[in-house]
Length: 257
Image (cartoon, rainbow, N blue to C red; front, top):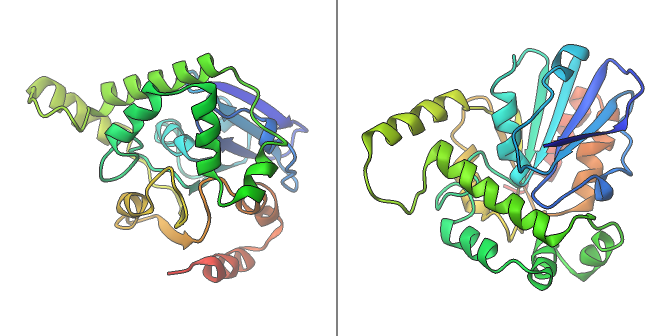
């Protein structure tokens, strides 16, 4: 996993952003959270992570998007919660799952058919309309297709190794015990989960299933697509200038439920 500082000015707080699959810092380095250092994580071919950042900062604020919601949960479940405030956007903690993530067959089809041409179709599906697609194409991630296909394959391999393959119906007690232990070990609840009802990558009903019965998580239904620049501007910049009451008011205003 790559950890790239966009702002590194020794602020007491860090904004830690877990980006999605195939991402890099390019679409997200324009944002400037107030009075914070800002780090972007991406490239999930490994789980290598420098945990010392949690000792370096008084407060770590986390935003996780898409596949980064799962990756963030793996990391955050291993650190104390007392100085972490976390938000998920359009992803789940079980990302390859027929009920709580991307359906297994859909994920497999994306992996099997990934080419530069189908990657462009994927980027279009992330966006709500042609205007949003044109905007992301002005600042696209700059990673090779072979590299991000390997990333997707390794994400799938690691996920199935930790939690099992929902399409594999064979029973193995040793593996089932391992999966149950990992579910407990990596269990993590975000403080807020923003669920875009126009998401065409993660089915919105699956995201609702993942988040809506949790004790500590506040799900918020919005009209966003999977990739939405206005939501990123809010999550990665504007909300950090708000008071707590202003944030809660804004969340209530955008909740479409």
